[in-house]
Figure (cartoon, rainbow, N blue to C red):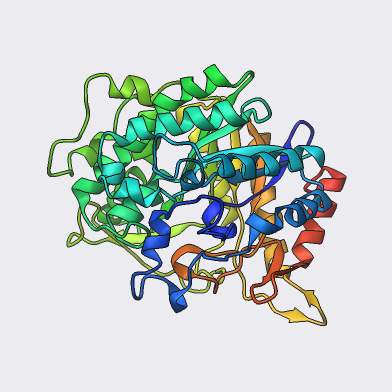
Length: 438
């Protein structure tokens, strides 16, 4: 595909390590990893892939792959250890080295400003539940875009607000581990508001800036045609992605879900105008299709997960269904009409084994191929998809799953930090070299 950006993606807490080096202060993930039972095997990101020290080696891997772009996130607490105010030169210097190293290798850096690792000192002040978080983030956005905007033109404000708000603050399955609907709704609103308020700041500081936001979208399906199950699908999709897409593109929350919230939403006059500040692209992270059924005992979304029998699944237990990906992309394009779409994450975890120093991961290759075909199908139908970032460059700290789940194109031996290309890395390299997905 011509004029198409091929890339790989990572995030700061998942790979950097060096949590007490370079002036970095603790993030909410450092704190959450200390909660007994929160992370599989009691793992943490203290060392992770040691990318903080091995970034040059990792940039060489990216160059070897032949991709156009590297999407990575900035650790807020490396830049502003107090959350606001004092700028940490060592943190700025680290990301300057990373950016310059990428550019020297012909790789375009794509910055994700926030990938879940809020400074703990700000969580202590209420975190995203505090409306002041909007100002904290815009200050952070100003610092980043002033320091890196002379070389970085592609900016993503937030990665997956759903995970921050619903998983982290409603279901308690990620940092900061809160279980409260009121808190979660405030978190979601303040994140969207912080996004909208930061967009003009980035554009002011960055010549030719392209600014977007990344949402993870997991479409729902059901096993029956029962009206209750069909309503459950509609409500679940509304809660999972329309809650974030509708404010960004239509200046409102979806009414069918608003009616189910048992309290007043934290909306101030003019908020939706800020949230819907026009963006240059929409980032979409897609991994799987979920199957659900109605469950009136669950609130605010009366649904429960059900398992389809006899369908292919990854090591995460996620169903593989590429046609859903195509349908999703077409539907989003028709309903919201984003200027551009970039697939900012897509990938799969498998139980990779090293045999004779080789990692044969044919299942990952098949997953990549089928989902790239799904993208081509959507693109042929007029969806403006202009880039694809494989998740992930490296096996890494997979949040609550610790180090048990491996998504990388490169296998990481966490004892030695040796990186080994999997067969999927060779596949992706050849694919990019030929600039085709068929």
